[in-house]
Image (tube, rainbow, N blue to C red):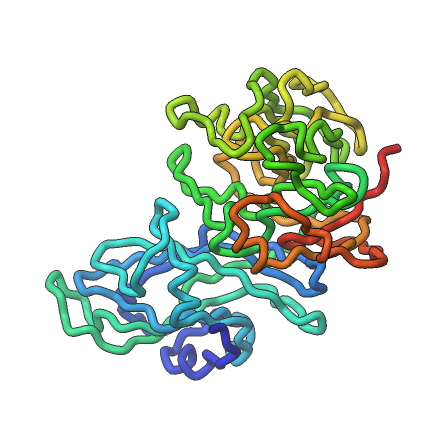
Length: 398
């Protein structure tokens, strides 16, 4: 479980302080760094401020290191603990560099783990300018090329700056009853843990990705058995430019995948895994990515300039997908896989409901009636990020 236990004593006892010009050197068998240089807080539909990023943890000693607790603190005030992770909660967030879950909090000699961090601040709380991380573990207390008896250790490490530059965009779709499937920020979800080694680096391009699907008037994501693309009310929907920009990448030649099945893995590569797609350069180092589009429906080419709200293509089921949906995310580079996802807010939409997270997790497919999650009267929202399984109404197409 997460808790608010203060790490101030732990950090101050080591003589580590972010502002200190010089502190006494300390042997730290477990070393850590953040995967990205900064983290961007964003305001969700739960009306909380969320921070999402990753730590890279490496055991640089010959002695196994067993994690006990990792806390996130305000580097300017070490008594302020923003989040802490321990026990089963900590274990659920650990991954191998290849993004596989692990079964133990022990990191063997010379091994590396990724820690998926996400936490929310209450509406009244203000994000600090810089974060630090306090760690408690059992590990080597001194340098040695042979294993030692692990001892209790604690120290601070891995600073990360807060970046307040957050893109605000328009909706990628139009109309009512759109569901944010596989949204932020469940570490067991389809997108959050999808780190990938690419071009010599490790990237989380899909960190804030959403798979948009549409409910029909009966509250269904699919009619019948869902084995045909035309049984999905979202199939063929117009895809819209979320902002003005320039087209930098497209693919338009792949056939739809039969729902309920995934493509032959031998046919998947780095270029076609996301099916027919579009990438737009929105400026200021921000790129918009749309995936799984219908064959032949892409209306733009590389070099074209587009305007917000312009129809770009139609929603399809191409690439590595088992059912029609629009995969959408923003990223910090033009590569759909070798970039890091960045959060954003949508300037205006209506909150129309919430599908039960537990009910959806237990379902074997998307078939069935999901209307019980719909609100009687949608409420207007401005400048928020849709969270997992929100049902939202976007403005109608002009």
